[in-house]
Image (tube, rainbow, N blue to C red):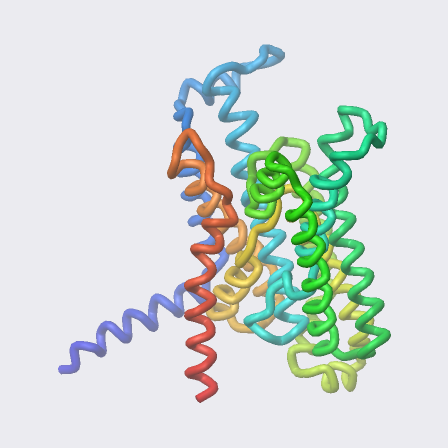
Length: 355
C-alpha cells in the first residue's frame, strides 16, 4: 500500500474544507489573535481591569484599565482595520492588472503620501504658518492623505493622455510617478536634521502607536462605505479578468471602471499610510493567499482579503510591540519579514508554472 496516499487524501480534504469555510477560519483566527494581543504587552491585562472598565461611569480610568481601554484596544482594532484596508486595496489592484504580483504601491499612491509626509516633516516644520497647536496633530495625516489623492489624480490624467484605455500604460505611469516621489523623499532626507530624520525614518517604517477611538470609528465607517462601493463593481471586475477587449464587448466601460478602482485604491491606501506610515506587503500577500484558496472570483476575494489583511497586520503589530518590551519596533519591519519570503516563493511558483 502506498503510504503517501493517505497523506495526499488528508491534504486534499483539509484544502477542500478550507475552501468551503474560509470566512469561518479567518474569523476564528482573528478572535484568537485579538485575545493574545490583549493579554500581551508591557502592562498585563487582568480580569479586574475589565471589571473596572465595565463598572466605570464618569470616573477616569487608571493603571491597567486605562492602558487596556485607551491604548491597547484601539491599537488592536486599528491594526485590524488598516490591514483590512490594505488587503482590499491589494485585491482591487491585482484585479485591475490581472496579475497576482501587482501591489497597490505600483500605482504610486503610497509614495505620493510618503512624499507629502516627508515635505511636511522637513519643510513645513521649519516654517511658521500660524497653525493652532490643536490642529498640528492632524497636519501630517492630512498632508499624507492629500498626497495620495493628488498622485491618484495625476496618475489617471497622465495615463489617459499618454496611453488612453491601456492598463499596461497605467502601470508604467505609476512606476514613473513612484520614481519622482522617491526623488523628493530622498531630497527631504538629505535636508532633514537629526530629529526630523528620526521622525521621517520611523514614519516610513509604519506604526500603530497613534491609535485612538475616534480614528477607529472613522476608519470603520469608511471601510463599510468602501466595501459597499466595491460590491457594486464586482461583476465588472470579474468581466475584466477575461481581458480588456472581452470586458468591452460585454458592455463594460473599462476606462470608467479603471478610474473607479484607482480612486478606491487611493482612498484606502491613502488613509492607511496617512495615519500609520508605510506598511508593505500586506496588500500583496493577503489577496494572493485568498485567491489560492477560493479562486479568482472577486465576490469572495475582496471581502476575504480584508479579513486576511487584518489578521496579518494584527500579528505583525503584536510582535512589533512585544518582542523588545518596553521599546517598540516599527511594524513595517515585521510585515517585510513576513512578506518578502512569501514574495520570493510566489515568484518561484510563477516561474515553475511558466516553464
